[in-house]
Image (tube, rainbow, N blue to C red; front, side, top):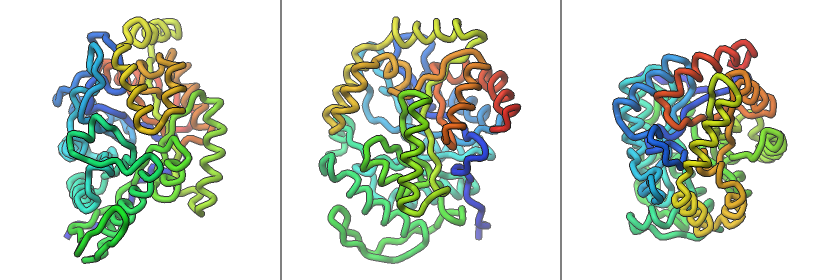
Length: 369
């Protein structure tokens, strides 16, 4: 019998948690035509994962796409399946938390529970699960999935998560008779090693999404338009967590795309090179259209006004500058109340070593690492 392990601490605000996002997808989160952009090569993924693990980074988070965004470079056109990739990384890492990602519309909660429990055993208690309630018409058509509608996706997610949590706690066999799921004799064995189960994460940008994440998950991911704007977001998220008596139990994270070079001007020049001059405009157009079709017209309209952020990193906040500038921006995000950040680069293998060697020591000196 395996020994239970304490849960990974990714919610406390004493130190800024840093993880890598989208190692499993071509171009990571960029949409660019530069030749050095990230490709999906398993040996390179292993090298970066080991580097992050040895350097003390906190988590590896995969995205899940089933089709790319087209354009000249087809970003995310190559994407390793998230749960399988995460399972494979358990054998080449030792301490870093490894998230899987599942999409509610196409993955049954009974399967997800068994998969993440298996991942927790394989990693010796280092598994996490990213729950995606959103809809992507082009992707999900491959599975014959039916959209429950923009106003009901988190209702479906509610039932899905209830079933998942009961299974991970070892309940059962039990039946469930909901609007979206009707199951008989549900059971999960093994259950996770982590005493309170794997860390659950959900990205919430809309009001229903944030409400769902605040009630059900341990990490709430949300995008921000600026660090100043981030202060206001965190205040509202804290109020939401308090509403459900979960203050201190939900960590607030934001995704970032990072360009770090010896000087601010070098970093800005490269950012302009890959995200403006060599932006994949066709892929950016597809991204905006998909958001509009998925019931996110406000987000799509906002993205039209800032295409560089889409090509730079999926609409996330860009942290651009010298090591000192990047460190100062990360310190300010922590001061704003963010417990953690995911970071992505144009090329992880080429750029992560410089970030680890030049930025992390500055964060350590500041007392947030």
